Image (cartoon, rainbow, N blue to C red; front, side, top):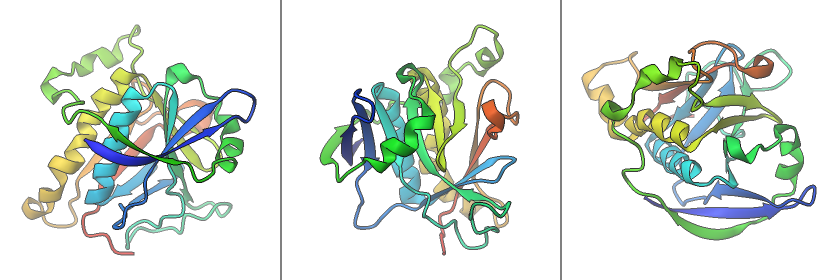
Length: 229
């Protein structure tokens, strides 16, 4: 799959950091992400799901880059409670960053890095359409083995959710995300409201537990094809 992105290079401490952001299309994709404190909630329309899957595939192949979706100013679909404002105990709106664990990026420095991002330069990337394995090829039982290391990890910094993992972790979880593009749009035709299509990702081997520093360990991604704000 081909996509247009912006590439930024910053040197906050002497070492170059490469940040990749999606190019703003004429018909922008809709994505919103919030920290609901007990879990993390994300909402995507069809274009948003396609963008998320494409950038997720790019993250699996970009070991030296931070993939940044600047979406914290986006409002969730109509009917979702809470205004996303910080400091009132309600949901908090977030950006999203996808990063390889081998990069060992210090998330505490993200606020400074983000402040130094300029216009960036346009770039076209291409990833294979079959970048994610078939569901039948994934042995989910391995994720409970003590020696297994290809889990996702979540962290929060500067109103940003960091999803950190290995190429294997991104590809295997990308299989579930791909269903937001291939299966979710037709779900409402077969399942009347209030049923919805969603994908859940977890931090570490056990769903529902908290990640480090009390970060919610579950990310619920809901398809919102009829997005009204």
